Figure 1: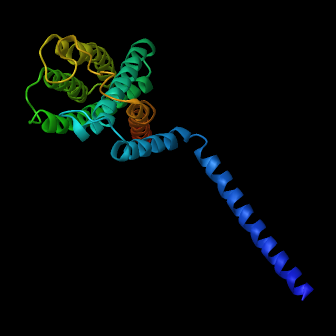
Figure 2 (figure 1 turned 90 degrees about the vertical axis):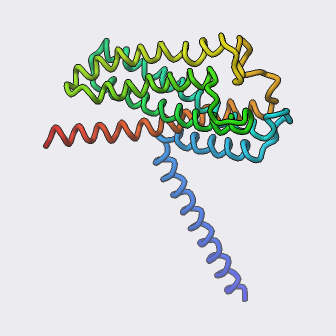
Figure 3 (figure 1 turned 60 degrees about the horizontal axis):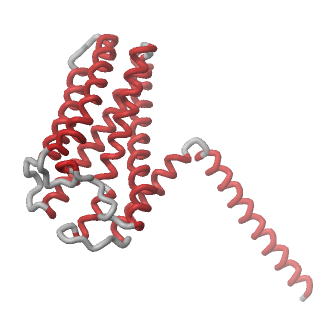
Length: 255
């Protein structure tokens, strides 16, 4: 009886040690795989937190806005991320004009592409929000028109680059135009809409991000989840596109 108990004890002990070693080995492998991709995991976690907080978290009761105020985590946060990406893009364009390195040009165009993606998504979510609060998805509001003009300027940046066959000329002209597009971004989105009467918050000099419109719960989700989450996701997309572009260039060189 004692021998049987001892055998069962050692069997359970070895089983426990085996499971412990398995979990330790799995954890070490995951840590090794994710040691350079921690920010990607962070992006997924932030967006998960944004969706949970955005759809299930509490929001203040505001007339007209009601539950549509949750779109703040998507529409506004995406445009914040767009501004970050366009800023990084123009920095790389300036660097290219100084260094003349093709990699800087690649970074500039891909960050611009990701910024356009967030801008279009922000414009779509904004139109959905406007449909609930203004009664129409598009009302030719100064803010809407300015945002559309800003995105069209960046779309022209893509068209201009693709119309030039010479690589060096494309990169240099594209860099100069990217600086122009970034300079036009602030007047079309931030300055001119504030000088006119607008349905959008921020018209006639009023703050577009009124501190009284949101409470502490929304601020936490917005600043700690939505803005960095959408921005990191766009950066992730940018890195993937850059890898594909670099691989295609290497293949064309060896072809």
